[in-house]
Length: 317
Image 1 (tube, one colour):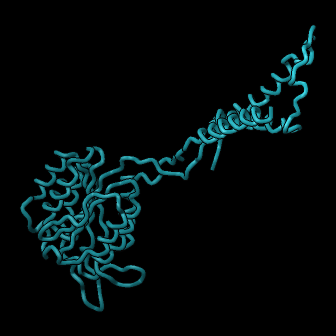
Image 2: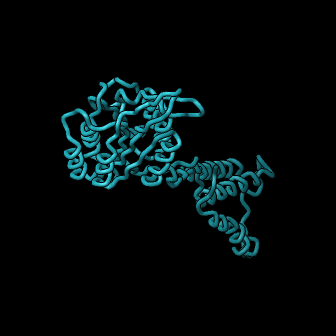
Image 3: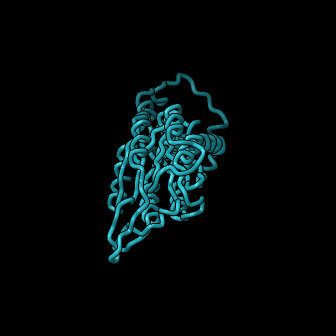
């Protein structure tokens, strides 16, 4: 789209006509003595073509006025880059995550499958944030480093496999690894979302040490406990592995985060929606339209028409 930054500059266009009217006419000058010369007998080679010169000069003036109006091309809307949060999702993939005590769209599924569906949608909504993914069980691994590529984070979330990092749970190591990835980022934006269905049963870093590290580097930790209830299934009782709710609550309380409990997919979706409100993203970043100045085009045309007019004036003389 083309628009003019100074459209009011077009008001100077009639100035040429105004000068023509106000300037005294050469016909009004009385010549006392006129000496005949050979020019009086010269036959004009292009009689009646003087209007071409006038047209060229008018076009040159119009193009110059157009350049004064500062034409510019308006580009498509672009979101301003903003500094969002640096958010690491730490997901438990220990053996207990295989228990099938969740229901998604009418079908019973394992905890890990339900978490993959809900968490991947959550990751896609974090527009403007750097999101990373850590999976942990007996050991903790960086699955995806902090990135703006939310599609990749979502894809790796859906591709997470139980047992890939062992069968036990090392919550402390997962927090420590997440902090290592976050400590160089701006202090006000460091967030960890820790999801687990168990308690800290292995690893080198204790929960207390992980909390101390989080406070040292100003990292907020939101904790989510999934499953961990008894459910009747086909006449038998499915006993889920115990979740250390108290430890998860302490982690979140002492680091400025919140603790959530999810025993079904509806709870899990509500938890991630609540985190969206607690840690709003930059999805509504202000939009701008780039402006490319084009004044040089009519300015060049003005020079072309002026040159052409002068050449025609000399040729038609």
